[in-house]
Image (cartoon, rainbow, N blue to C red):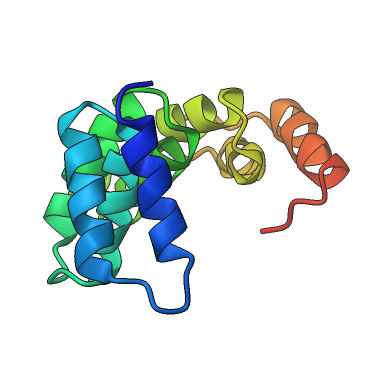
Length: 146
C-alpha cells in the first residue's frame, strides 16, 4: 500500500519512550497525502482526542469517514460510533448500523457485538432477536463484551 513505509516509521517512532510527536505527525501527514488510509485513520484519532493537535471532532469525523470508505476496519467502527453518538455529525442510526456491519465484515471483532446489540434493540435496523442472538453468540465466542 502506498505510504506503508512512512506509516511504519511513524508507528516505530511513536512507540519509543522519547517519541517526537512532531516527527510522528509529519510522517502520518506524508503517508496520508500518499493515500495511506491507515495513516488517515491514525490522524483522525489524534484529532478526536486532541493528541499533539487541537481537538477537532469534525476533522476526526472527516478523516474516519475517508478511512472507512477505504475499508479500514477500525475506522468503520469509529465512524459507526460517531453516527450512533452524534460525534462530529448528527446522529444517524442507519449509518451507524451500516458501518458497524461493514467493520464486522472487515474483521473488527467489537463490531460483531455492536451489530448484535443494534439488532436486539432495533437501532438503525428492524429489530430481529434471532439475528441479534446469532451475532451476540458469535461475539461471546470471541470473548467480546459490551
